[in-house]
Image 1 (cartoon, rainbow, N blue to C red):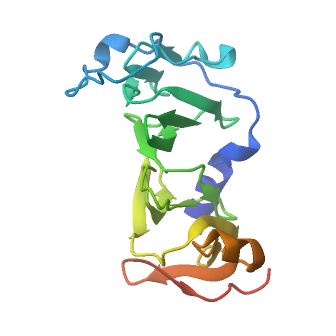
Image 2 (image 1 turned 180 degrees about the horizontal axis):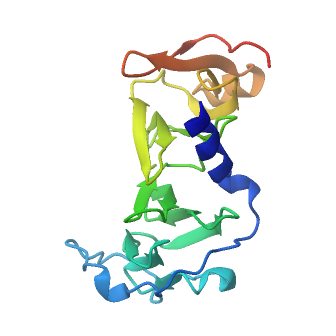
Length: 229
């Protein structure tokens, strides 16, 4: 439990952080460390690198195909942006460990979550993740009828001392739309909801409630509700 408390003190919900208070590494990130994409995007419309917010320029560099981000140890973690046309909401945690931004491309979208600890890691969570009360776990649900999203599932990750580790994924969710995480109830129950696919029915229908819980070595999703806080 003490280890969980330490992790919880480190991790902050990205969505609640409007500005970045970054720890500046010993070295700036190196775009030369980022390999050229194996499949060049010939359909890309933008002619310039994606923007870097002014408050992040000491730790983030950009070219047409990448964000190069300095790790806390002074290395570089690369994010492939070659299929992205735009980004929004580039922000980070107050302690400087995590960065996060949403992106859109041609018939595609997602949300990148970057951990600057250790060698660095970039995970596409589809939408901005939701954090457990201890901030030791994060989860996201993103299901679109078109399957243009980058997650197309419900997933849970554990924040570790260096990096994040996926501990559950459910892809076979009921055919509904506007899936969302409503709240966490402790560390082991996540309340989700969605609407019917039929547009007319969705305007009249209440949200259908689902619950996600640990099951075996992963997580499961089914009808139900979490206990009240």
